[in-house]
Image (cartoon, rainbow, N blue to C red; front, side):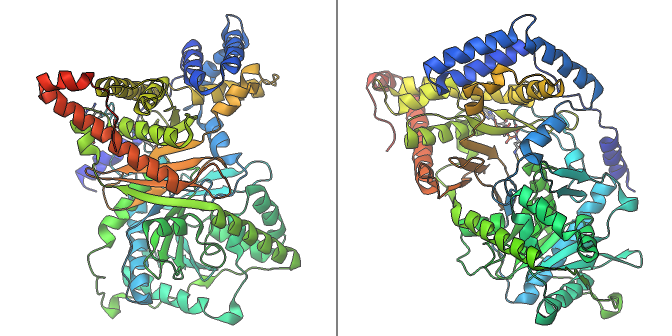
Length: 633
Ligand code: COA
């Protein structure tokens, strides 16, 4: 092992990061009131204020719960981890596709034929094995924070979950099983899905990993076997696309048979799933490729060629539509990006290495997974297929690249690109609905032991003041007034961001207090029964920055029926947005939101340009600043 590798390994093993703090109770309660005041009616707010004050009063319930949380912090590596995991993922009964599992969409590949696609898949599998070896040996270099508060090392634990996790469906709550074992005892097979059939691909033979040519030859065998109509099994993967309780019930029916138990055990213990998809028959636009990654296009396309419980599913479409679908509970999108970039950086470009026939071994064909079906299971498959189709029909997706400027322009204004984009999203929503709504932006907690995320509540009072000025609501605002409000909004956003990434946001804390009250078997405290609390956790705007350094983008669905999922990828000179909503909801439309977002970014950009121009011409600017100015357009 090289010295550098040894250092990297030591770096990961000896990572001693601070524990996530428990914020002071009063600070959280004050921030909570500030976050909700402008989002609820005055009457409701008065009620909420009284409830919150009672909760936080000396000797009140809040203090009791806070004390318990502080004790929990002492006893655990991360006091919020399990609470958060259950609340965010495991207790959620909604289907994983669209509602929970994000996807990375790779650039459209050009395959001349099936063999080209299989070559791509073989190379991808090789790269996965190389990446996994680095993880198992704890040899990945430690990530270091960029952006706000740059330079601190980040927790690497999420990487260990990439190829060792499985989410089991449960009747009431799911279970995430993570096998943290390292190199010595890890799994040596992957599952390949092809034409809705599942195959076990051993990636090691006689103690030696398969090379690219050997993997290619195994994939060719799989493709051939999948075409054999006589051995075809029903599309069992469709069950994993269902609501979690439905899938848990179906799984109980499946495991009554030993054959099914054996097949499930092989999938559950695999490294990952590789889905060889049929051509989807749609133009390969960014939006269509995102849709195919998120739901596979339902039973008519590749929706059953998946196993959603498995953390990493690599999709290789024969038409060049490729990407990764992730079960979200074991890790965040940022880790999924790091892995995807490692794979893609070395796959595209170089031709498949020609390996001499003597160096390829004669391997026995991969094993087809067998299933036992009966009329009950057949009916369950049909019902799951129908529900997936409804989800497919319902997803309104719009992937939009804003090309007028990117983060370099924003930095030149001496503004935070992330804050700026968040403000633009708020303005876009305001343009659509004339109000702001509770908004979620993920903030990484990886500066702490086992850190996952907390929430930046981006719909601040300051951004409301800004968007009103842009709409010239109540008065006509000058550019300098708008600019002042923009800067205030950005400051509020950046302050919240810094609070969140240093463990001082309110969402995890409030959740912790609620969970502790449950553990103490208390009656649910009023603060958590209050209409404001419930509304403030209904995230109509669910947003996340997922930046990439190679050409690819992330997407996900809305988290509530009347909401938008908005993932963005700021690049130096453009920004990619993946906007999703549900067709069944009459209040939302991804196209309408995208249009408003485009206008918002142009208008804010224009405002910055005008203000900069005015500032560089002092005499004219003081005159211009006095003139009422209709912004944008
Ligand atoms: N003037 C000039 N430049 C500025 C600036 C300013 N006022 N403020 C920030 N910048 C620069 C930063 O230095 C940084 O520079 P770099 O690109 O050279 O590193 C860049 O602009 C980006 O900073 P910013 O836009 O402020 O945001 P960030 O990169 O710190 O990101 C979060 C903020 C909240 C997105 C980030 O902290 C985070 O938590 N990311 C993880 C999100 C996540 O988990 N997503 C997946 C969920 S599944």
